[in-house]
Image (spheres, rainbow, N blue to C red):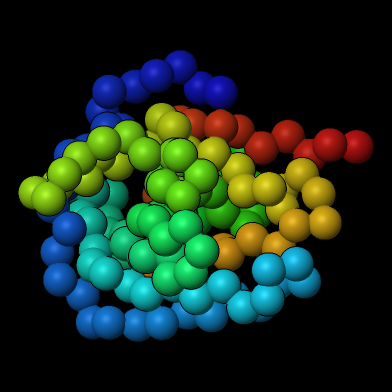
Length: 137
């Protein structure tokens, strides 16, 4: 984990985005549906889609794929509120803190199938904060 850097924390409004539905097939949970509910802009870094998990617990989901070679190749997660990964915010804004980016379960075991970042959840810059990926051997 990199040292905390406050420059990577954003409190941003969720802006309107064209509705989109993604359905992620999994071996254990069947098809897991997501609905795009908006986008957030992280200053000069770019924008990310904000998704709603449209099944069992529901929740806000923001995955991230960045250009860092020390990130898991499939991406990381910033928010996954159904699992308790929620940094706050309210009706006006979400807290997106890249310092708390974490690896999805599938980074550690092929037993898991993870929803990975699509084109709207990619940043062209390296995000050198948050959980770093070290392949288990």
